Amino acid sequence: LDTLTLSFALERMREWLGPDDPIVRSLLAKDSPDMLAARLVNGSQLADPKLRQRLWDGGAAALEAAHDPMIEFARSVDAPARAVRKRYEDEVEAPVDAAAEKIARARFRVYGTSVPPDATFTLRLNVGTVQGWKEDGHEVEPFTRLARLFERATGQEPFRIPDSWLRVQGALDRETRFDLSTSNDIVGGNSGSPLIDTGGRLVGLMFDGNIHSIAGSFWFDPELNRAVAVDPAIMFEALRKVYQADGLLAELGRR
Image (cartoon, rainbow, N blue to C red; front, side):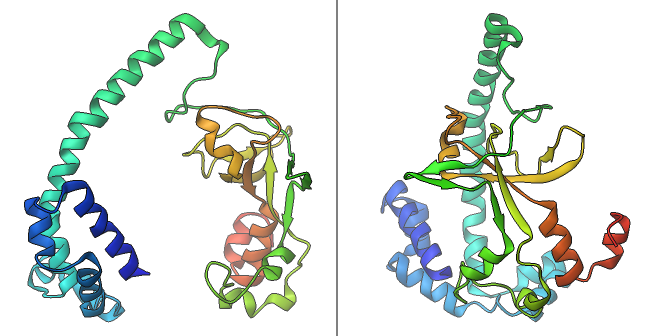
């Protein structure tokens, strides 16, 4: 996977910058993206945690003295990558941010408080209810339960269950609620936001949305768009039986 990911990135670099770009020629030379990626990944020793610890302890001097091919590669792309990033920040992000601020001010003058503010790190409250949705004619329930985790397990990523969970699976309550979906209108960046009920109690932590919410930055369909939160029930079940985090449970008043 590491080789494939790096090869793909090198291929895109050559495609976007062109084969005659000095950076491309310097990095690839006569290698193909596949060849360079394989040589870097196979030749690197950074998978060894002891080596990483030595580099961490040694600081910048240890990194400068290291001859690992992956470190040398990172060192060779660092300066041009920073230059490209700086240019992008100055010529793209800065003008876009400035224009967005002007547009937001203009919208506020026209619409006032009749529309919600952009989720630009400002306090934003949104009202919704726990709801499922209909997918291809089938009702999707608003709650998932722990049992489904084990039903879908294959032993291989991304459906491999950690050993720490497998060791205690017999003690786990498989009816424990895991996730829940709501009709709240959220966007990317809301992950970790608290889900509060009408009594002011924390009943979930937002972390995602269903497939229909991807377009939520532009359009909200009340029949399909759903936010997804993790249920506190699975947090407590895991803290108690998987991680034996009794101290943390005591702090939370959940011995």
